[in-house]
Length: 234
Image (cartoon, rainbow, N blue to C red; front, side, top):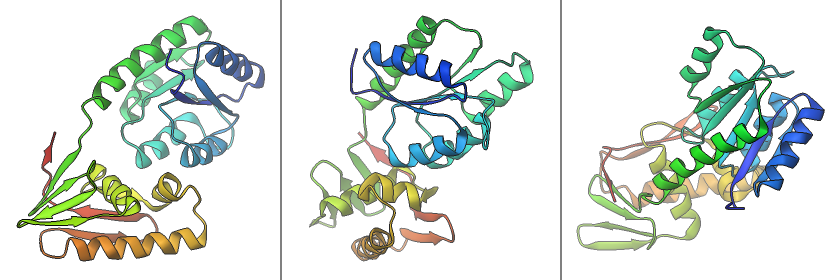
């Protein structure tokens, strides 16, 4: 088992939650346990998770609401729902939000691990083909070499410029949530890091200014959006 896989586990039943976390850890996973949806969302913003296991019926914020908020931040992270409900409407609701799987209680912990393993194998296959080149109008953005190339001119990016532009490209023509970017790149979303990110956004705008079709706009109260023709190169 790849011990680098990190799982966010949200389960309001303390005994079941602890049993599941211990079982996942015994199987070689890293697992963080949260007991309500609000705690789960805050943990997700701070951590880099490979998969989320969410109980549907939780206090403060239910699993469906939490999953929707997670999807607003990260459209790709796999989500498995745990629920005592078996109504078809609940299953449909879960998949409509973007769930990868759905397990009805009571369930076998071995079955849960089997499903987690199957999903992560599929995700790993996609990551092995991770995009390293983005075509942004007249620019080619090489994420490995950390450069922007346009009209024969190469501009070297700093590590943070590169990381921020990668997140913007990953969410191209969609909103990159401010708090998520701060936690992903700066670890903490305090005032000083927020001001620092604003400076880097300004730098990226200057680096991309030669193509009028490319724009980084502020989305009030949410974050930023990179507007550009979508064209990715492997």
